[in-house]
Image (tube, rainbow, N blue to C red; front, side, top):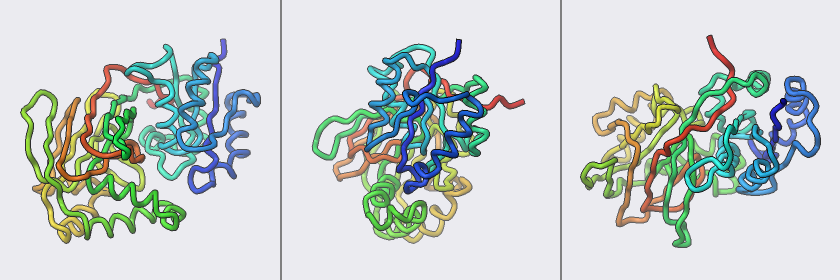
Length: 315
């Protein structure tokens, strides 16, 4: 019996290029999956709409959901199939057709081309990916919960993401906006004092420029934050970038984010964790999978299940 497949497209992904490419993408998907009925395809109309569409699709009996867009679209879709820290239905398979600015999921699994991604969906082979839960304070003081799969970031890194997405001119520039905001933020952002608790260990007081919790090795925009990270090992790679000055950050940390060599800096540490709680007396932004969800305090917890991701079977 064929698996019911729902395609969720973000036409605005990659500065609107995703929507323009949809006829080509649709043709490739149909070449591998067969004809798609109009009811099998849905276009997002705004932020978090993919979450609603995914939940409705599962309720309608779909068990394979495909996001057409970037990691943000996939993250929204994924949030629609989880409730109360567990999947809302058994035997779900998620997939990504890489058509966004950041497509870390497809890059990590070696299926960045449209043909490879479509083939992965049709083959039926899957790989497990971890899911973590992030709880933070929203910008209006409300409690915000978000499920993530790539990374959670705090401090300077989260500020760079927030600024790059919210300055209209920079947002239209795509990836270069992150380059510009990284340079500006690095020269103006000073380390903050944090209170951090890792797993069952005692709380620590640390001054840090940024904190990153990575499930995948990369994070889009050509970054290699946690080389060798396993997205299915039920562990997060916790990276602490410590009390480093502006010039040293600009010259010794930022240029080395692309190959992971920044990890060799004496004020950068890396370890595994499954639960992290972090707070500060300062206002500090928090980001999950490229979306600013609010501010500290924030807690991150690895959940005790995997989601199945369509992937090309490798030898």
